[in-house]
Image (cartoon, rainbow, N blue to C red; front, side):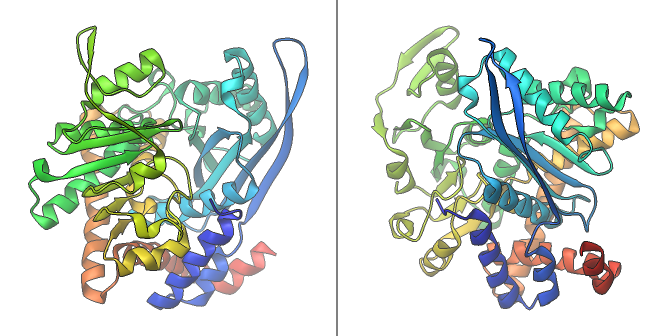
Amino acid sequence: MSTDLLKDALKRVNTIVEKTGIEQSTYQALAQPQRTLSSNISIRRDNGKLDYFEAHRCQYNDLLGPTKGGIRFHQDTNVSEVQALALWMTLKCAAVGVPFGGAKGAVTVDPKTLSPMELERLARAYIRANADFIGPEQDIPAPDVYTNARIMGWMMDEYEKIARRKSPAVITGKPLIFGGSAGRESATGRGAFLIIEQLSNKNNWDNSDKTVAIQGFGNGGYHCARLLQQSGYKVVAVSDSKGGIYCKEGLDIESVYQEKQRSKSLKAVYCKDSVCESVEHDVISNDELLSLNVDILVPAALAGAITKENADSIAANYIVEIANGPVEADADPILNDRGIMVIPDILANAGGVIVSYFEWCQNRQGEAWDEQVVNDKLANYMQDAFDRAWELSREEGLDIRDAVYKIALQRIQSALQAHGTQSYFENRE
């Protein structure tokens, strides 16, 4: 993984700006975040000890609307990562036409070392440190790595206590009972699945002939794998942070998921009711999974999985990025030269922010849409965004990543021009 994720992300943006003819002022507007709040937050551990944790919230760019982005709890997070993720969120919202800017938040902590009560104290402490920095018209957090609907519920409750008013639109990805949206939990994985289905439509695939390997079996990876298998694809490998499993005949994803929930380990099993039978499989590493000879590779773990050092070992024809930044910028030309099509994260994993936008709209309008309505609207957004990128790539001879980025950068460029370039930069001084 790159030691400076923001630098790597900006390197890619600058390369695409120069390649596609986007105005340099647009890159300058994105070359640094608008604002970042860093703090040290404290919680009382269950044993009475007081512990401190680094916490960050970056509002990268609000040209297209209030900023939007998740909050992650992870031991390896840092300011550079948070800012890079906020930049990608800015581009993601622009790429799919969601009227938000980009933001991101994080706490440097291993959440697996916290008790449930300590986790709640940390979530509430994070909101106390950022209460004046966020808001339904300013910056709207959501779940991310190692955070979930329950944690978002605690955060919303803490914000409402401070604001002394009900404010469900301040947080998305909440439990349904607190104003969360149907379809939000599966949205990231469903969005990636919809993109793969668009690839199938463009290429007239027989889904049953296509093999898939998925690195990362968290929320996004699991739901994508589940939907792919239901649609006829053969998911032959999945992995988590400890390693992976491979079965050339294909895995039963729901059974693998049930076994992981039960035993906390990945095993190739087939379950009927409460009875699970082991299926013959190979145990593989994450690096081995990346080099499998499959049609579609889905990196759904953390950033920096594919680098210039291992890009030559990739055997898949298509890479669909569910993780944020799984392919480093230096690996792009290697993959392009080898004819591997990469569907970038700012399109492939946009399902989460799209349905978060739907949740924000429902909260502000006092409505609750059923899951089919949410899924249909999500499908429309994903299909429209993919079709625009596909057509642009064919018209201008661009690879899909460059086409998606150009669409996003053109929207930001238009907003910058409408705002007034000089006025925008003066307001940031």
